[in-house]
Image 1: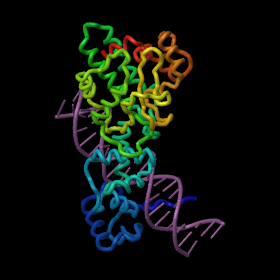
Image 2 (image 1 turned 45 degrees about the vertical axis):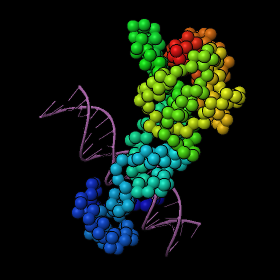
Image 3 (image 1 turned 180 degrees about the horizontal axis):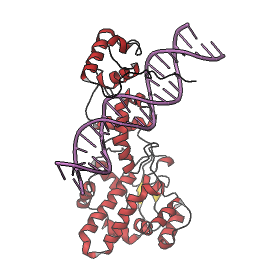
Image 4 (image 1 turned 60 degrees about the vertical axis):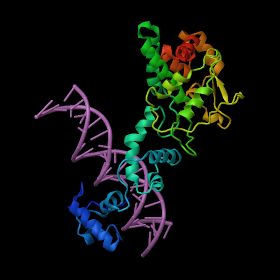
Length: 320
DNA sequence: AAGCGCATCAACCGCCCATGC
DNA sequence: CGCATGGGCGGTTGATGCGCT
């Protein structure tokens, strides 16, 4: 079964196109249209298969092709459409005038996919990755943070690390799950400030403006595009939309009213163990967090993980 | 300057689907 | 209905360029 390839005839040229071949192809299509692609090469005097001609035309020679770097808007459009359509490059390309499916596919594979992976997002599902490998960068950063905090001679470095840790918390809390619907706005300070303000510091230890400013600019944002969050400052927080991270930190992140259960934050979603269990295990027995759950597996992989996230003294260090 | 590794992207390959006979 | 054909699509490859050692 199956059909023979269109390019299996001997003697047909493969590989990069020369300017002369391009010229012939463009001239022929300009004069006659492409008609049957299989018949075109002979008619145009090209020693190529029809398929090769079609690809060259659609991906490179078409007059309406837009070349050059993808804009921020285009990048966001691709991300949004990919989260809906998956690898339907041709369908995605119809929403990006002048861009070919091949170009979008290449851009995805060489840029966007890597960015998402670096951010801990599964590029196929657009969901946060919960496996241990996705958590490694955070684990390493947090382990380093603890080391820094334990060494008073490196106070300055520790301060920066604290800010980095909080920046990570910000990023984590602003990650929607496959919720690109609607506008994906650039990460703006206002959004970040809202998020900051949505974090309760019950000891009255709110982050001051200077720290906020530092926090918002350090380290340089790793998020290449922003996510619209539905965080707000509403003081009334329902149990449905507030998640308390155990009993240790009294640390509450508000998710607003219009997020579904399925769209809680990246950080919080990864903590699938019920708060009482996780918090009790992790806060009361930080060295004993090894029972079988995804969360505790993570904790077991790094003895610092639970302590850093939920130990009051650490959290107070961070926010002071 | 040479060698190496990595990133990029144009082009190819193989499969699938629609259509015509 | 079954087969042949053309066109389209997504995945993969390989040439090229660039940066680092």
